[in-house]
Length: 87
Image (cartoon, rainbow, N blue to C red; front, side, top):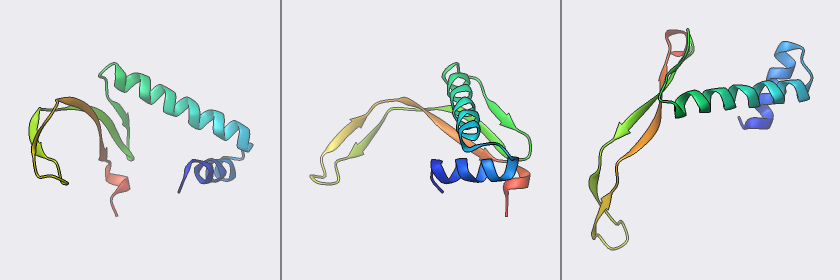
């Protein structure tokens, strides 16, 4: 499902117009992004939670040449599924 299909599904399921559903989705994405950038966690009970994790620096391999390369430390977004999302 892509963003357009999600907007269509949100509009159909909620009775909103597609424009309102798009604004709602954009607002959710914006609020989630801002919260994660601050280092906080976003928890949606039953669905799951988004958080930020730190990946440490490590040595990797260039798949083309096999040469060792240094991969810098960085922050990544993690998602942990809630109980209602497990199948």
